[in-house]
Amino acid sequence: MSSTYPHPMARVWTGLALAVAVLLTAAITLPPAVAESSAAGPGDPVPFTLAAPTGPEQIGTFELHLIDTERPDPWADGGGPRELMISLWYPARHDPAAPPTPYLPARVASFYNQTSAELGIVKDAVDFAGATTHAQTRAAVAGAEPRPVVLYSPGGGRPRFLGTQQVEDLVSRGYVVVTVDSTYQAPVEFPDGLTMPARGVDLKQALAERVRDLSFVLDQLELLQAGANPDVDGRDLPAGIGATLDLSRVGMFGHSMGGFAAAETMITDDRIDAGVNLDGSMGRKYQGRPDATLDRPFLLMGGGTDGESDRPHTHRGAPDWADYWGRFTGWKRDLYLPAAEHMSFTDLQTLLPEVGTELDLDQEAVRAAIGTVDPAAGLAVQRAYLAAFFDQHLNDRPQPILDTVPAEHRIAELIS
Image (cartoon, rainbow, N blue to C red; front, side):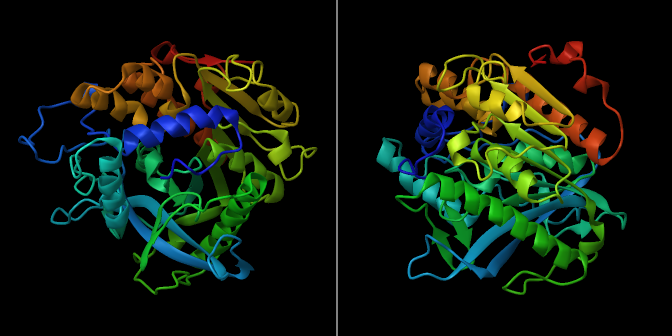
């Protein structure tokens, strides 16, 4: 993650700066609801964990290295085709003897350990390398039935792993989720090394390339569904993984720039049936087709205030959301968490409160990043509404909470 990587939206500036300052330096422990005493001794790296998914399915995951041979990468040194790293997360059957998948790839974890010293935190103070998910790598596919597929795009400057708690929960409820890194927009680990964000990126072009990335990923998933192996390194795939992809039911969600990309990709690619924007600004001057309408279901989910107007980050308060809202001609909803902030819609929502306790972080900075929303309740709302949205629009199962917020989620409001 690079603090020098620019962002097109004022809403993102503060959140990104705080994310960089905190994520690269923080010792992370368990969320408050399940926190336990750290097993680390003085000077040992501090361990952390992720909140457990709530569905019944176990989780498998694996990476794919993709190359778009027909598209030059605008930021690659010396030219060359566009390369991507993605992860597939799918319902699986666990092997009791197999270890869990690491939260971060080794080079990304090492990057965080190295850079934390630059911000005044002792190198290797956090056990980034030891953090794990609830998945197993290349675990056996659970059953042969086709599953709906959901794409995930992270915020600008952030790797695809920072939405793992949302991703794992959807998979535990029966979805296949495909997380996509945007090369040169975040630190990305390829088989032969770590690629860092580019400098001097044109922001409209960055969004446009991300949209092209996502459509290309769908192309590769079609190959995978047909029995091919699109991984350019030829790594083994879990048996039956192609058959578990139902590409007639495709959704997408993303945080920040990734949420903006969800709408932009749906405008250019009708294979995506429903989309969600988690708190991402949607400036008209960065859009590929500023006058296009979108007739498929879309959910806006925001928190706190809009970075430009300082009004509530809803379609009523944020001018860019209001503009896009008027062009959503199909099913649409706007879910608002008043006490949340921009980074509440990432794994930091549950991790940062404990970071502040462990490292005595500036609590004003933490509040600016994730607001004052109860961490467990904030994550529960996001998980509930993401699942309800995709259940209704990909699985044809009506979800009452999309029309009326139930009592257990009253920290959120539906804005009409």
